[in-house]
Amino acid sequence: MENDTRSKDSQSTMWTMEKGTMTMFISEVVGTGVLLFVGCMGSLGTMGPTPPPPLQASMAFGMTVNLLIMMLGHISGAHMNPAVTIGAVIVGVKTIPTGIVYVIAQFIGATIGYGLLMTITPPELFNDGYSNSTSSFCVTVVHPSISTTQAILIETLCTSFILCAACATWDPRCAHTTDSTAIRFGFSVVGISLAASPYTGCSMNPARTFGPAFWNSNWTNQWIYWFGPTAGALLGTYTYQLLFAIKETDKPNESIGFIEMKAIKSYDEDITISKERNDKEENLRFVPEKGDSVA
Image (tube, rainbow, N blue to C red; front, side, top):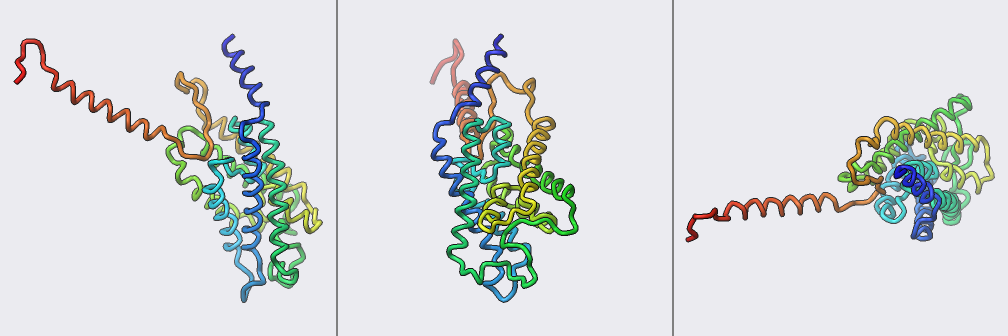
């Protein structure tokens, strides 16, 4: 009966709007906008003597993720990606209504960020610098030799890797490592992007693909970048939950919930408790027994 009550309470909680959702909405709009603005800016190929190498674009996106987690991680978790939000809802970090608000914010932010970059860049300079390029700037495209099935698998697998990393940061056992979450997550994006970009552009993010496609009216293979990352979110999250997450039978009596990407105080509290225990032990050593004289 108690388990049934807890299950009903949990289900009802998942359908409530979280407190501060509007602030988190703004955070996700700003974060996703900055991601597209800076990330795509790093891919411009007309501002230097030669087009930028693939490393530059990957570093621009990855290090922007690093920046935004530091800037907004304590506010909204700095998802900036509907796939990450889907994972957060599955593990219980976010409720369903708040997750929907997040996704809307991410698409709005991506559209604004890319539009802002178009506004500040002269049209004749707004390209990747390659004269033989046939795609619009910063629009994710599938390599001509890659089939649709292969493209879906690439986007699904790459996104699942990112979601496994996200689930690890939400795992209570990683609570003591949150101070390095930003840099670790940023370089994870860099590494995966460097490897998979030649195949599909390595979007891993429907909102990231939507922004440039919207402004360029280029919807070729757009569905791949929605279906692949969504499937990857499900694959990565459930894989981590089934194989690595703490099982109910392994949890202590007290409730252990998943945490957002933010620092916690438990480590400092453990240190304080340990010091108090040592002080008590030291005091007990000097308590005189009956019959002993006190000088």
